[in-house]
Length: 160
Image 1 (tube, rainbow, N blue to C red):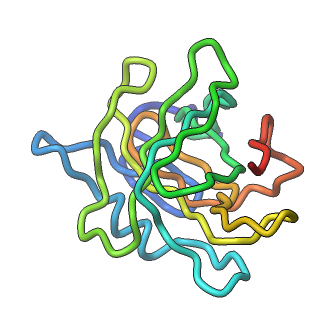
Image 2: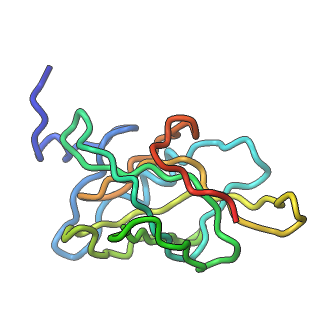
């Protein structure tokens, strides 16, 4: 097996890291999102504007990249979850159709950018909500577009 290095993140494939940011603040993440967004089996998977907080940061994967696995729901576009950790990680979420859905932000001192796939659903009480698919994101560079079964998520969000 090839020893993971930061250089191994330079050539993305499905399940690997997206390219690192270029000096002008862009990378190939949008095209990866467009090409590899998984079919979640619902009527219309979408991207929404908003911010979510997560704490279940996984260790480095086989390619030497940190990632975070998400499962959850938000009540309305842009609404934040309650903090589930003393130092939660903030993840930006972007609406579908954004021509360049990248918004660099600081995560654990690193530049991060990516998008999260969500879909609308109705709660048991009849309220409209947004549920996140379980996707992985590379905290070093951009999204790892890969479905993660809910049962494998280390600390899934609860629907609200």
